[in-house]
Length: 331
Image 1 (spheres, rainbow, N blue to C red):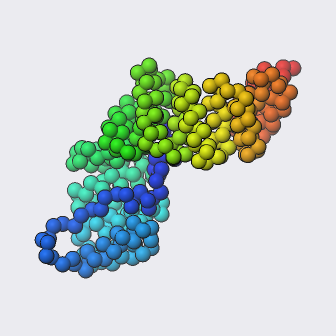
Image 2: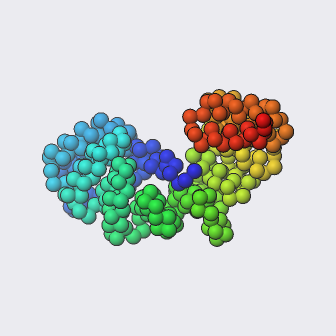
Image 3: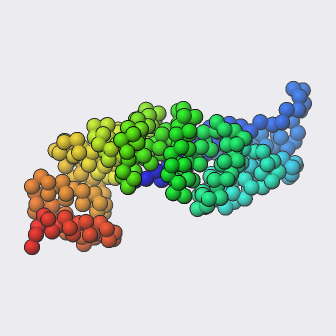
């Protein structure tokens, strides 16, 4: 699994929760005694509603503020945020672009326009906006993280690694950057060097430290650690993930980590549970079949493999199961 965790990253936090944590864009200084204008009152009320998750109420306030002061970029930006919370990415991208037309220095609009462009499958168009934002605010960790994701989408692995390292250093309590970096470094297709392996283990540990009760983080870090040979740490991560979210997918990952760590009895238990929990998950049944074969239960393994071959829609899985069946029950 690569660093594209749902990911992962687009939202480990829910949209409205993420917006609630984003710093408020300040009004221009007008003097301590100045009264807010009608547009500013509407805008402020809309921002409060947005942070509370009342998207329709917030939208109405921002539309009103925009009507009262068409030159103010802030209500337009937050109309983009409303669209973003609704996953209306074309609308969000257009609103962020409109806000930048009113205020070309609005860094947050640059970053969020890039996020929208990436969601629309246009990472190549997102990268210039992120670089522009980083020119204005070099220590902006969110922009570094998004830049890493875009560069990875574009196949620029070295550039993505540099961006994820910078984001991890700047977002001190956020698990997304070290997790993304660790997943990329641990990518089995790349064959990590010894130095990359060491760094991957370190940053995955850091991601787990930053998010000790986040099943998404633990569930992604665990398999990567297993591939890196850190079986006990992988078991720890996946046991915690299963305790938080006991899905069949996490159970089968835990089973594989336990097997690699030498705890075959518990591995078989977890694989059996996963197969029963999600009988339609043929990948889980395939893993269980391989474990049964290794344990010498060739008849049960063959039965499971035949079920996989008959039901698998994925040609690659069907081919692997067929090859395994030939080994388990040769004609």
